[in-house]
Length: 199
Ligand SMILES: [Zn+2]
Image (cartoon, rainbow, N blue to C red; front, top):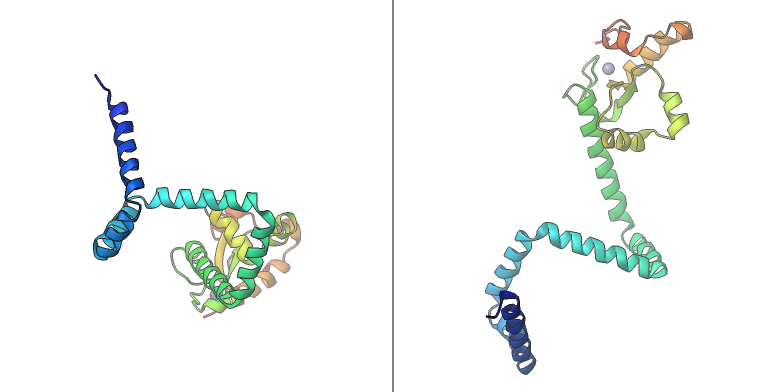
């Protein structure tokens, strides 16, 4: 009895012998049946998308490792050729990130939690217990990098969305208090350090 593996191997060998004898058959068939070929490739891609992406990611990685100089050179050339496109993509990505993050810290609204100001340009992230300076000093994180960090770390607590007006008012109010009396996170969360509604 021939087992299935043997049978599969034989079939594969037969197919190979046949295609060696008819080297152009598949190509010609594909050219004659463009629509069918396109559909087949499209379906195949849709069904195996994850696998295809993984394979191309790995082969690109291997290529970069094998040809580090070419890879660096290629990246540079690509950058100079597409600098406008890349900058635009980064800007749009950063704006999207800001919007998503500040919406999260604005209690599901893309607006200041104190006064409701919703113009994007003046919205910013506030460190509730005023330790932004320390965070920047320790991690070198601010702006987009801080947003990326917070997203990657599953939106930790301790932040809220404020407009710049409310930031300045809060700063002024906190400056009036001696440092050791700065409210704790819990006090702030309970609303004990009130920021007046200015509108
Ligand atoms: Zn505000």
